[in-house]
Length: 334
Image 1: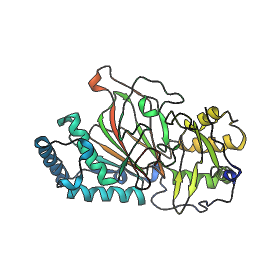
Image 2: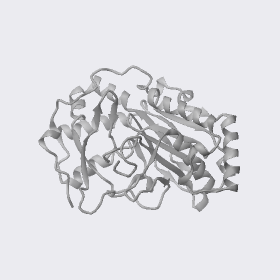
Image 3: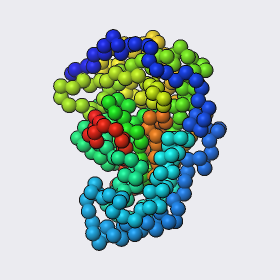
């Protein structure tokens, strides 16, 4: 097993940092945000376009990943998704569209429509080292452990950045709910701008540590001969705040690398984790079948509580997920 070897330059502290409190719409907390800020109804014109697309595909089907929104009359959806992206970039960072009549569709039709809507948000990219572009979020029966990606389990996850351990995390994450679990699976989302603001007020000394690298485990998505760990800061700033926080992969990274997880490093990680776990900062809801959730994956975190599935196969919790990134290649490493 190879372990990433940081250079002395990795510990250079004179890096660009966000040095002021952010007071705009991106820095919200539970009490300052309303459901109307992140929940949008799907307009009737968009539902009519969906119906027309499905009718066309039933006559002339194509493989899902060959479908192009420009091939179909989706002008209202294009306008809606421009508004979704604006809210992701400029406002609360999360949008839930309510909702599509998924109970009337086949599984193939649900995937086709999700793909077309996702492409309107941004370029879909691979989510696994094997090149999966659309993944199923469902419990496979595997227990969460080092080397096991969380989306294959029913384990609860604190709000986090998807793929924080990759060279190029996705800019946006899209989720489409097909079936919900009878118990648990509550979705949560949080603003890392707010988390950063609070750390600046409470523990500026530990905030500086978060701009220096932490080990993260790569959760099994690496090739033979490659390092099992990476080494990235939790916060970076290039005019926009960017986060790489995940509660599981950072302690796992120190364990995998055989490095001590202690002192200022552990204290800084625990300080940010305490805020991410605080219900006064995150919003929560149950994502219902037919709803779509979109998240700005660089400045906002999303997670879920543990869930218990139905024993009936067709009633198990099942979401579809896409990742979107405009820069770099479309492969997993970008």
